[in-house]
Length: 145
Length: 200
Image 1 (cartoon, rainbow over the protein chains, first blue to last red):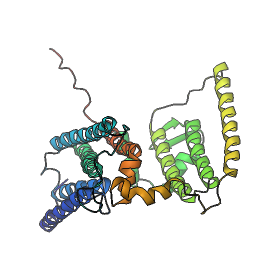
Image 2 (image 1 turned 90 degrees about the horizontal axis):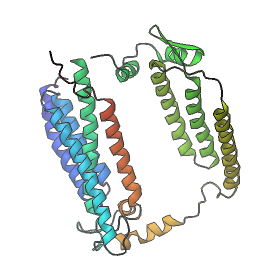
Image 3 (image 1 turned 90 degrees about the vertical axis):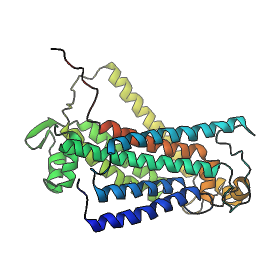
Image 4 (image 1 turned 180 degrees about the horizontal axis):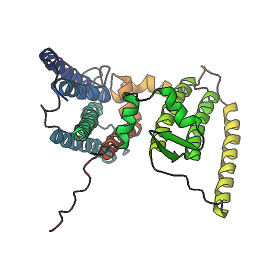
């Protein structure tokens, strides 16, 4: 897959930063604004996918990227599970126990564990979608070779 | 690299080597053998028919349970799945095994018929007690809407429900994504186990 023209490359460079920042915002402010972990993760992976589509495959070391994203994916869902397990040792002792104080609604640090879960699942979704995309690209490239 | 099955399906849909009408003709209308590019294979009729039957039966169930939007989704999903399954099955070298019906087969078939009859009986009993369409009694959701702010402190109601009241469901949702990635990685893996270097 060759890269596209210079105009497309430059525009993708500029736009992907905005998409990335918006994805970060959506994941971190999921508990006080529309969005959340899933939507933020999709946006984050979309930024990378846009760059790869514009610059072509040869520009990136895709195999290393794919291994990294697989590790991120597995580790983040493990962290979410462990965090859910910590609820068993606090307060009324049930799975997914939200034991941190709720705080004042509307502030960034509120909602107990919800923002942390949002960030973790944002990383997870971004890593998953990137992994799938990388796997498809690598397959296509290796078949063509 | 060989011309693998997934490439074949992708080519089929993307390049449109033959039209969709011919696709339907090749895969559906011929009963005994289906042909594609000169290859013939036995069509496992039972498999295709049962998947389609279950899917479209679910559509009827959803309609009876007063969920028209779910039924619409199910129709689309079922049609697409059936086409893909047919393409995969016809391309594969799998053949239908024609074995004589034994004692065990009779037991399993009769048991499945009994179970289906039981299911339909209780389904019929259950849908009588449903509320009329559009007039549901709100049991849990009313409490969710009213008390999510003070219980969780999350201004976004959806996230409060997803990560506090329904945490396990959301974990399952994330697991589905995880499984999808695993499936893609396994199916699209070209280099399998590394072959042992042969000694000369």
